[in-house]
Image 1 (tube, rainbow, N blue to C red):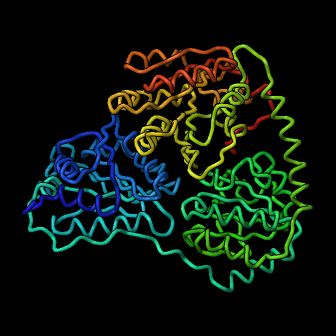
Image 2: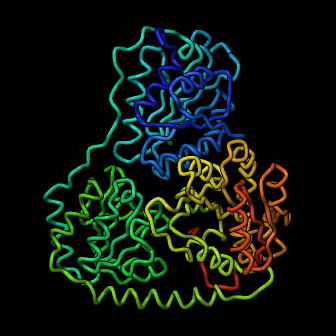
Image 3: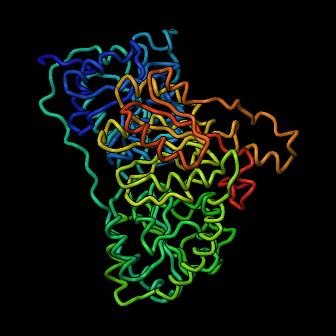
Length: 545
């Protein structure tokens, strides 16, 4: 193309960065970018809601360890995408949201869908800015990719005014190079302090978080734990970085282990509500080693004895080298005994025989079905909390959930992105009925693009996680605003052109899932579950008040 327009330049930058698909809901403000995508072989998947497009970009980033891109029109297109960007920020996903805008020459005059967009994003993005000259597009996008990927990964908002996209300019002499990340070496003084703590520890444990996944530390993690018999728990995007079937990986007894541990290694794990802010239930005398991608995340809520910004893989490799001869087998055996106690409870819950079925009986069937060819997406409250306790994730990137923002509605958008990237994989959404309603209409998107995702809906006809808490605190008669209709969501997907079944017998879950995947169509299996199912166990809510 002799004289490229702004949209063409943006698409060229996508191609240069290795981004092969973008997610959108159309609008006149951003049409030139679509033209550029067509010219450069970039797939464009259009959604029914901008929030879903942003969630899909988040999932693309997680699954590729590259930048995900969503493109939306000005005004309501941008505001509709806010939740997806906020979720990506909390989940450490490097996505770019491109928002259209009125022409610069009309700025401030009251143009169609004009609003102050960049200021709105500044508190929950790594950068938010307007490109004011078509000539600056290539460099500005290279900077955005670098910002999104470097340090603590996260989203960037780029406002692209209508005239900047439509302007034609002389082609640039060359494009900026693809952005890559150089691993940050751990400082030798920090490494020495870390060795000193762990060589004197009798009961250390390691919690592997999202950073271990992003920095491909899974092989180093496995080597370390097998060499030293160090107990490991995984958190967030770290699920699967050590297979949950590995004898040194645990998932049910973390609270007990934190009470007893004399040293805790956190790698990419925020000290948030999931870890009780590093306070309640911890051994107050435990030494803390904290590894993060950004110094701003260190010493938050609890001061670490060793706090370092470093690459997770390099830290794990250093630990293997420095802890040669260390063996924590006795402590590992103790953690295993604690885990077995919890497993006994879990096995009792999985055997609860009620009609409608219990959450854990439902999850037991899913555990039997899920294999290494299946990507699992959790989108719900109690039903996902139960499934996460039961299902063993064995590979990095095999499990996706919203992350610490707890944003419902990610299921279908995440699944669409995953299925498009990995057409040979089975992509299974574990949905609550409440969460299905938020972006369930994206099954229309899956059907239009021929992406055979499958959702299994644990349907308790309500916002179960909230309803149970309200009943316990205020009584059943005052648990208002928490009930839904017992809708058969399978029929909605069937009406859109997909496949659906309604299943009430737990023994029929696996056959129904097999039929759904064999259909080759986007599918939904609707399964009624006991509204009081969680109350019949001692399982706890993930929310901390």
